[in-house]
Each structure stands twice: as C-alpha cells, then as structure tokens.
Length: 273
Image 1 (tube, rainbow, N blue to C red):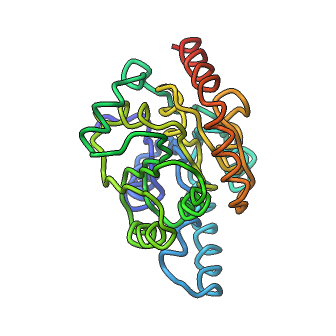
Image 2: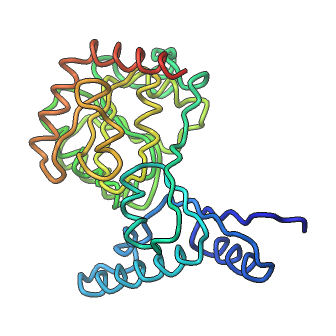
C-alpha cells in the first residue's frame, strides 16, 4: 500500500497493528490519545490489590505504546499533561480538540422527544453516554435524590443494572432510555434543563459541548478535562469529585440559573460557529 503516515486511534489490537506496520516500513507513527487505559482495571478484578497491579501494568503498557509514537495528539490540555509524563521529552504532544457540529447540535423540539420517550412534564436532568463504572454515574443519582426533577439517562453499559437498582432504591423518578440514535441527540439535550456529568476520567467530555450547543448548561465534576471544558457561570458549574451534597447543590444552582446559562451557551455557540 502507498502509505506515508500511520495513525493509531487505540493502543489495543488495531493500534498494535499500526505499530508493526510503522516499524516494518519505517514510517512515522502518530497516535491519537483518547482513553486512559488504567481506568478500566476495575473491570478485570474487584480485589483492590489485583486492581492496583493491573493499573500499574496498564500504565507501563501505555508508556511503552506511546514511546513508539513519533507524535501524540490529545483533545485537551489536561490529557496532554498526562501524556507528557508518559512519553520521551523528544516526542511532540499537541492538543487538537474534537469539534462539535453546530449545524446538527442546535436547539430542537423538546416536546417531540418527551412524547416519543413518554417523559413527564416538568424539570429534567440527565446524561447520555457510556454507563461504565468509571463514569461515576452513581454520584449523579445520589445527588438527584432530593432534587425536584426527573432523571433521564440515555446510553448503555455494564453499570446500567446497578444504576437502575440504585435509582429504584432511592425512589427516584428515573428513566433509562438505552442507546439513543444520533438523530435524537439534539432533542434529548434540548429537553434537559441540566446535563449532569460526574465522570472524572474524561479526556475532553464532548457530550458536554454537544449539550451546550443545544443551549443546555452542564453540572460537571471538577476533574480531568471537564475542569476546562466547563467555564463556571458561563456554560455550567463545577463541583468537587466525591461530594454528593456539592453535586446536589450545583444541580440546583444550574436549574436556578438555567435561563441565563442557556443564553450564555448559545452566545458562545454563535461566537464559534
């Protein structure tokens, strides 16, 4: 094949194929870094000592893989800081954020979405994306307990059964919609009064920006890339990781300021469109 550059999007099987191709044909290898591999150690073991060893092994593997790259592309400055610690000082690491299609992600008919998914009237707070343990969605559900709002979660993943059980135990008015077709996402975001994002492991948090583009402010954990993705008082507010009461207070604050935050989100959207 007539190849000039090998571009790897994953450090796993396909990425290893890219490493072999680059070495075999003496080609430059560029890696896009999207996922901290060590964050998934808990899927392989529930024993803390074993999980810690898996994390250390994953970190070593990640360093090995990145050291084979001639350049690394990251979606945020927070992710770049992580990668900088794991690569040679001679390896360029650059930040290229993923963009949002503002022609597609724009305010949409929320009523149609409510009708389609049989959602009640009133305030909606929600999230869409992977239901993984690393996403910390149980913190959102516990924080929603005591907030006068219906919880709506789109997406799926291994943590979903436990999340559904937790929502039931808390007595939440919670709706788990499962995987949402991409064409439904603008309506989903527009239907929400607040998008709640408790995941501390994001490398950019693209769904937060999609929500903002639809005029929906974000309640974000102050960790990972979300520390930069959300600008307090502009497109949402932060709370401290692990602080359920703080998350609840921030949800209420965003709901109280929903009108002004939504206007600010759309102003920012128009400014970059």
